[in-house]
Each structure stands twice: as C-alpha cells, then as structure tokens.
Length: 240
Image (tube, rainbow, N blue to C red):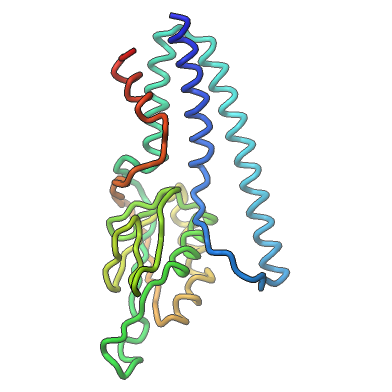
C-alpha cells in the first residue's frame, strides 16, 4: 500500500514536470549569425520574460497540485491522477480538439510571376517556423498544418526540395493552417499586421486569414519520447 502511495506521488511529479515542458510549444530554428537589430532583441527579451512568468505560474500550480494529492486518500489520488493523464494527453496534442480560432490559407501571390510554370512557390521550414513562433507569441493554443498536428516535438525539415512536417511531406500550395485560441479576435488582429505576411510575400506567397467559430484539429499520430507512458498505462489499468 505504501509502495502504491509513493508511486502515485512520483508519477504526479513527473506529470506536472511534463505539463510545464509542454506549455511552451516553441519551434527550434537553426543557429545562424546574429543579425538582429535592437528592436528585435528587445522584443525577444519581452517574450522570454513572459515565458519566465508563465513558467513560474506553472511551477506554483504544480506545487499546489502535489500538496492536494498528498492530502487525498488513495482512491481520490488515483481518480485525480487519471484526470491529470487526460489533461496531459490533451496538452500534448494526443487527442482531437475542437474550438474557435483562425484559419490561414497559404496561396501563391502571383501565379504567373515565373516564366517557368513548373517553378511554384514553396513553403519552406524557415517560413513555417517563423509563422509558428508568431502564432504562439500571439496566443495560439493548438495548431495543425493540413492534417498534421503541431506539438512540442514536431520536426519541420527540408528534404530534397520538399518540406516535411511530422515526417510527412506537405502538399503543394494552397496549404491550410488551422489555429485555436482563447481570444481569436486578438490573434486575428495581430496576424493581420504581422511580420510573417511580409516574409511570405517575399517568397511569392500570400496569407489569407479568416475567423472561424469552430475548427477541428486532428490528434498527433507520432510517437512521443515519454519514458513513463508504460507506467501510466499500468496505473490506468490497475496493474502492479
């Protein structure tokens, strides 16, 4: 009985730590030479300060959750643990989710700009990474590019001239990006004047943004590198 109690507390600690990590779904960009101006540096500093405050809030929430677990009976701990697992799956993008947000359609800006009809504008990983970073900074909670759910471990790569998301090739433009947000109007206003529009236009791509009352995003179908997944499954089924 004591072993079960200690195991539950240990798993709770792991879950709360993972929830904190998943909270920040930032996309990594390749290292490059420092070319930012003062305004860009200040903007990034503000973003990092905001992330730090969010992290502190998450740590406080996690500590409160652990205290509540310790004050509960074993049966209550198991029920609360299952709820935490469900919340973890949701935040990790492992479940289908529906809500309000915005839709971004990526189209060619000038379809006849090139004399060679076989040359068509491509959405590169760099463009997608920058767009995703802006969306996250402006309040996006969940994102899907075509049928690929974006999570914290999503790889976006360039392979033989084709952009791959979650190890699946993106189709040619037009490409739809669906974004959920707690405040879609605020997100829409930000994206209408975002730097991303100019960056896509340079590559002969246009962003058509619209508000959506209901959007459904698919679940992430890849594998997450979580060592404790089997342990959680055992606890859910009640196995020793």
